[in-house]
Length: 336
Image 1: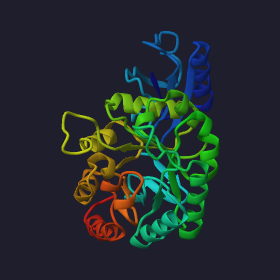
Image 2: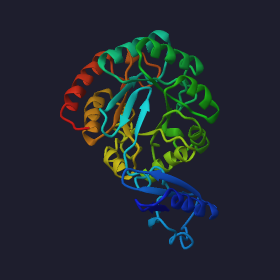
Image 3: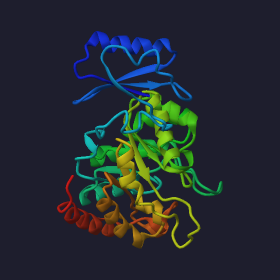
Image 4: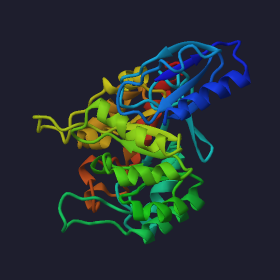
């Protein structure tokens, strides 16, 4: 439920409504805005009877929000949110950003060399996996905390903020010590204990859509993080699983404008995981930008043919530099 206050409502009237909601055993969250002040009502599992509050002074109207996600929705937060990642602004009205780097951190030379190369080409963030969720248990699982240390070294050498994945609630603390943006992978989108833990920290989170998740499930997962108090969340489309086998996943570009209609949170796109093919990453990067994505996540490796993870979808340094030239040209025609 959303209680919209009159623009003439006093502080005392606002406090009285908040208290009345709390007396109903629900949580009241004031939402100040440029044109209105509203109070979001959370904690209910069904319809809320507004009989005891509808006639309180200062209330303009009461809206019953049926969506399972509330804090994430534009009903509760009409203005678009901008998330700041170590000085890099991501969101509506900002230049689309590019996060680039290898799927997995394999060693110091590889990650530092890549960081310097993607920085020179124009990347805004360095991506790299230290903890790797893999389909098969016998594949490379990542360097874990040593990988985090190497990412921090690469940040020092390049100046790029780093984004890396966190896989379990127990690892949130250590990953947050190193990372500037904590990524939740597709396989963990509905790891609710992890989402709750990320809601308790005050660092930005990049939440990837699960491979079979509906839009409602995707936004409901983000709601877990916001409900915990962490409002710095960026969504990421990385392809969904369909009947098609010609690509790794099916890239759902319609999600970009749809998310922008439904939610105030920024939305990025990962064409590397969405397609699984190096040749498809450049055209789908451009398509995502035209669709309105606030950022792109791209895998880059110095020697993709030797990569321990996702080599076929990783761009070479030369390929990434060429793509960034095209991105700059495209951005000059787009309005942010």
